[in-house]
Structures are given as structure tokens and as C-alpha cells.
Length: 164
Image (cartoon, rainbow, N blue to C red; front, side, top):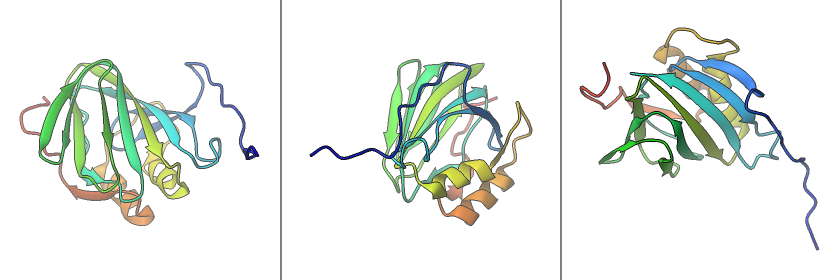
């Protein structure tokens, strides 16, 4: 017997999706939210510029996969560091420390978060505003992480000399 699905097909063009300025730097374009996927996943594009970096962090309850659509990023996970260009990807299981920074003038990644938990979605929403751009504010990212428990900030970005 086939199980019934509580959600429907999601079809979005390149210019469709809620756009939010992420206080860690960059613009997220939400392609699928938890409610759209029945909690299976979250999916967004992240448009960034050179030097954008993340703190050293983990996601205790979700897995995160990044696929590079444009540009080049430097990824660190545990004790491994790797440059990734167009077509490169990294999949980080829950609880594994990681960070990345943008090496090219601009970069665009597709971020897949599984499962699509309300807690994780609330983290991203709490650390962003509906806008085209704004200032980097890691303090606000940290507040959203503490409030939701979706991300644990372990320290500052681990990269030396990679960004301008």
C-alpha cells in the first residue's frame, strides 16, 4: 500500500523564493521550507561575496549538504580543509564541526538541510531579515543559535589568510 503524502510538488523558477539577508553575510533565497516538504528537508540558495565566512560550528540535529553553483569556497570539516569550485560539494553529518569561507569575488551555493526541522528553520529565520542586503552580525547569529539550539557556535572562523 502506498503512503499518502501530506505535501505537494514544489516548483519554483530561478527568480522565485523568499529572499532574506543573513546576518552571517549573504542573501538566502528560500526554495523549500519545512512546511513545503512535510519536514523532509529545507533548501535555499546562498549568494555571497569574497571574504564571507562562517564561525566554526555544528548542527546537533540535522545534516547539511552544500553544493557550489558559482565561485569557489574553502571548507574545513574536522581536520580536513578543501577548496571547492563549481560542481563541488560537502555533506556534513549532524554534530560534525565545520566552517567555510568564500574565496572568489562572488559565490553561490545550494544548501540542503535534512531533516527540515522547525527548530532549524527558526534558527535561519531568527538570524536573517527579509531584505536584499545588510551588515554581518555574528552576535545575532549567536543569539539565534542559543535560542533555537539548532546550531552550536564553537568559535570564530578557523581560516587564516584565506579571505581579504
